[in-house]
Image 1 (cartoon, rainbow, N blue to C red):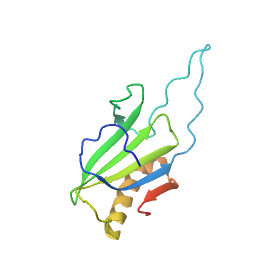
Image 2 (cartoon, rainbow, N blue to C red):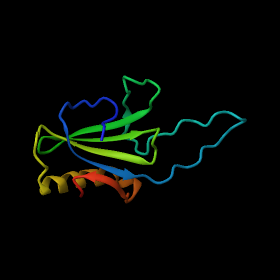
Image 3 (spheres, one colour):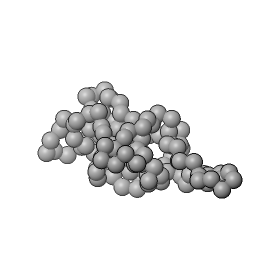
Length: 127
């Protein structure tokens, strides 16, 4: 899974989850103008420019977690039905222990709680 935007943390993505978001509300068109751009589903998501394509609208949130890993949430306006969560840590060549997977999933659930329960589209490793 390619990571979008520019992450502040340079650690590798050790685990990730893609969540399906509810259908966004239809935009209101006024006097034949173009619809307004979609807004990110969570207020904590901030613009995260893609240096190779300045037209792309990507929003991200990063937060260091207890235990020395970083939670990163990413939303791409070109794929508005998906919210990606990444577990970034200085781990190389080994799978994430099951307890860490549970901790990651709990942190993701806490951050996306305002959206309600979201179905998992795909994940590595599976929660």
